Image 1 (tube, one colour):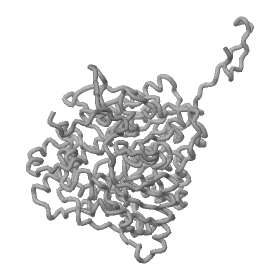
Image 2 (tube, rainbow, N blue to C red; image 1 turned 90 degrees about the horizontal axis):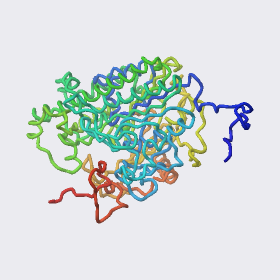
Image 3 (cartoon, rainbow, N blue to C red; image 1 turned 60 degrees about the vertical axis):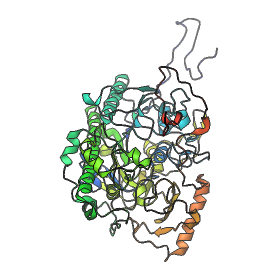
Length: 603
């Protein structure tokens, strides 16, 4: 048996004629910063207080006031794709994550199988001695690997995280969540009647992880990925967080949006000259609604606001614990959203969003009877898309769309007195693929060439660390393609070409989801001067439009975007279909995507 390769001592026949030598601990130098990424879900550009909202988010606002607020930060328009970019620094199609994991198809950009050549940030840091923790929403494991009895090569603990506590799917009930602890299913520690809420549980667990870490090492830095289910539906929060908003949204989404826009302008968030985009015809004017509709829709927004404020308060608990440890100022904190505000409540909102996804109409009268249950464990509610439109002020459209309302989101960075400037706004173009290279840049690390024996693909994002001192330097990210469910866009040097193609399952504007892609009408914007995409220059600058269209096709080839397809695909991965299933007593919970489809049957 051979000796350890790096052993620097000597081994004689006895202890007396031997010399021991310890290998140094694999740990970064003292003073290396911790990293905390807080990724919220379905929070629109205008829904933090520091981005113009009147929803109370004092924790996020304080981080922005003492850090940096990024006004031109972009994502992919959908959750799994954005999360894949955030974790790897590569584009979503490069990760096989064109859509959410439940909408797979058998093409390289669409199979939901993140290549091991695209290593996770957690893997990079873990190999350098960081402790790594993931809490909350994962949504990065392909359907056929979600079963507890299946392979776990793309579960959190296989992708560089030491510990995981959260849920694997795209959403879960905040009171009765489908929980996974490390790599096994667990029940919540208490019931709603005993005061349970998932976000509170996550913070409790995060604090426990940090206590355990400091019991082991007083100096080892940590990377924590904290991804609550909020503010994705179901919008659920304790009553004491919802009720303070009673009556606060009675003015309706049109007037609320006007007020938000003015606060955005006054605070310097928006570039000079930014216009407020017009209300589309398919979002009803608030004044045209009935009194009952106004009462229900306002209450749905009150519940959402309470949910977001509750989330802010829980993140505040985590921040306060870092202060107790005297580690807050040496922790890089990033707070962001994964896409724009969600229109998945439909035009009228929903007591149970599953009705919307399955095209089941809801009755205003029935929903009014249940208005007091909104936000509780008895509802799976989502607000109307008028509030999502307002939540993305001043931008167009929503989550899923490649217009700015889908892809431009809030992002805050805080790092104590280590930031060269604080309380300022940055307007440089930034994309979620830039997070990994920026953090590596700050840490003085090169992207590893090999992780776990696998040669790595190049990082596709660019660092924005040079923007920390100043808003006057140019962005390093000059070109970025977008594609989501058939809608496309390309950003290049301050210009953006964009086209909405209706996805087959939701056509917000009533357009024909069967129309060929060649019939799509592209729009062109000089977003360096027209941040909110108000002035379409396609007819006056046809050569620029043609240039960007050709660039989009080039980028699509480069990043395995093709073939274009607006069909969502079947729910789950059906490569492993069987005609016989046998389940023995006592098995672990089955994810829906791996179970036989027994819905809409008479047995």
